Image (cartoon, rainbow over all chains, first blue to last red; front, side):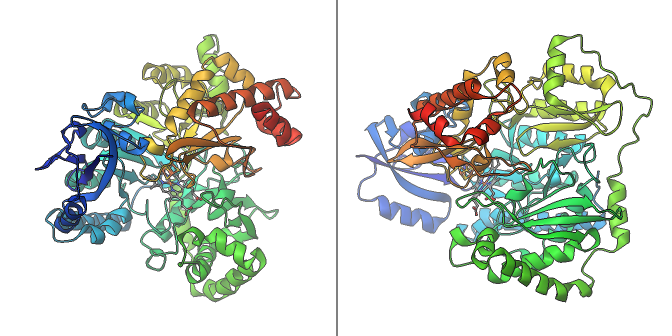
Length: 95
Length: 545
Ligand code: HEM
Ligand code: SF4
């Protein structure tokens, strides 16, 4: 099962995904992480600019990821009860 | 209302300056997240599912119009235009940015507000009766004593690192609107035959993982000595409360492990040492604070009649308005549970409107209730109609207080990192099943309370119907509990049977209510009373049979 790297930006708290080079607030920009995941997390923890970095399980294909847990789907799309605040790349309908 | 003196303001200003510096150091990378996290938590700042979440303290749930307007300003400027009023009479914002936090704290401190002691293992915001100062059945306004507790507990050096969080509630009537028996300390102000005031003291109540009803450790402590007595309770807890196991760290576990008698004996021994030391506030300080809670100058000529010819207004009055101790006045509750709304949420425009209406019609005072509603406590009956129209214009005139759609729900998995399941959609779906107001009124008083995990922030243990979100192999699932109450007849709800999925729990609640309507002895018998009379078996049969 593909895994994505996610975390929250220190300055804003924004939910972010790792795109291979940088961070994006849109899950569709994320790349699947291979064996390098743990090393990436270790470097992020050391750099101290991304809070709570974690690898999460997803299904789907690049550009079309869907986290497997409700919690991560909520993080990716926004509160299920506020469709007006959805993050754009993923509708709250998927929750 | 209480206004800060120079000491209160100096304490807040110093703390704000200190935390602003800590934030700046974190943003510059001079301290690590591990070092920073406990500091931000002490200042009410959590990291939640979507962003930072800020909890602002509203002492004993009382606010002025100016303060409410500032809460609206904060929602508009630093958040996404809304806030969430909580079961602890506070407000939470869900989309706060650390880089703007210093400005936010400055804004808050301009109106004598702050966010410290809204998290962490300290004495949290003191809660109280939302009808304080207005209820006919109170012996005195409980808030001066809540304010004394606030001052005593603010940055109390000995009690800043307790084994666990500590919550105190104060009321002054036999009717309990603040769930005092479910607090670490619950204080009930009473008057004895000689006309003196004193407190009955409950200790060791709480919800969460291990719900416990508080025990009376003292039936009478004179008001003049309640601070040193509280100090004695906290000392015994601080000394012997378990720090080895977070799940056993609350005072309720200590009281249970020692037994009430032994616990009480230790408190009394500690108090015998403390009482002579002069820790209690001098009478002049009591007088200063009590004077600030003096009731507004009520208009003795205010007419005591109401024109109820508008049927919609009449329904709202019947459901949301309570008797006031002064003739010609009334207490109005503003429901934050509108149709299809989110329990406890208010937009900045709504907060502004409530501030305006409070200034115009309610002596500039607003209260937050533990049921996540707002109260205007001193409204002239003659102004109620205009108030109602003003509320209706901003979607705040829902006449559903204490009815099936007046549901408490914690943020749940829509916002909270600790959640197992979502709470808000469950509340919305249940409310939608009973949208028709006539049906709601026919069902009568029914308190449904939903928590997204075992921590119980949504008071599910105290629900006539309690719903608890659990994780069932990665899926959201819900347990059903019945028979709880957070009032003077406090009881803990009991699990009825196996859990449900999201749709199943809504159907189960419908079945329970359907059964109740057929089984009640008459329209006056509440759901809770029918449950108490018949016991769980027939309810279980109705749901699972
Ligand atoms: C950031 C979101 C929140 C977090 C992390 C959180 C965390 C917790 C935890 C861990 C407990 C259990 C404490 C214990 O048993 O020792 C608890 C209890 C509680 N929380 Fe929250 N909570 C949150 C939001 C809320 C909200 C929004 C409300 C009000 C709607 C609330 C009101 C309460 C109440 C009333 C209790 C029960 C107190 C007791 O155990 O006696 N909390 N919370
Ligand atoms: S009960 Fe659980 S899910 Fe709900 S707010 Fe509290 S910690 Fe979060």
